[in-house]
Image (cartoon, rainbow, N blue to C red):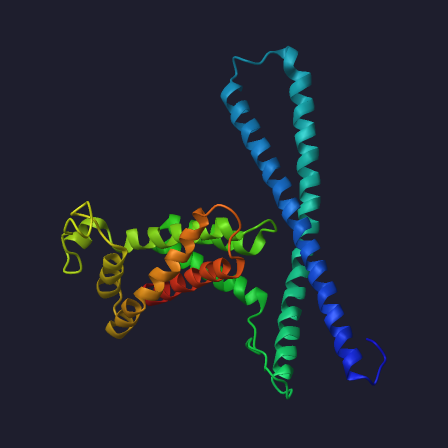
Length: 288
């Protein structure tokens, strides 16, 4: 720490350290993403090789002339497997270290922001002084992924992919995140409110020519109404979810901007993705 009695200098020193840490975290994430991509390429390579080997490897194919090649290939694969075990062991150590850093980051953030709320500053910080630990966030998302998977396996998979893109992608995660967030919404309400069930309910009405070219069309608001009042056991919670449907559909409209060519409004688009994640979590909490 800078040895100084000047609070301004000390404050600037903290700012510089925060910027340095952010750059280091960006660099670490970039390296981990690169490693994940390379592991993905290796998985694809070995999956393809395994399928090819299985399709051609029949007893009739081999003869004593192939023993040398087969033995050498087996030895090579064993060596690769042993090296992979060693790398995986180092990765386990790395993950444990990252978990420790993640916990420490939450303590630092909460303590710093709690202190800032005591400072007589104008304007006051707008962020909450209390932060979830990154590890707690990770566990929470895994729990929601499991709950969504209990409703429909693809829902859990889609949620997991969305969280992975939002948090583990260095290149622009916003646009693909918007597509997945919208897909998550549509799939959730397709499962909760099947078309035939909605059409046979009091929440649907046959559309006039002015309303739609398809008289049997189902609007998203109708699926939300059916899901709220038919799938949520608590009537007060159901009413609240339905009352929030206008805001929910506004978020959905914002996600449609993913189709726009050119640059996105980054802050608005990112917020729309986070809002849809939270909306999904609220529905899961009300149903599961």
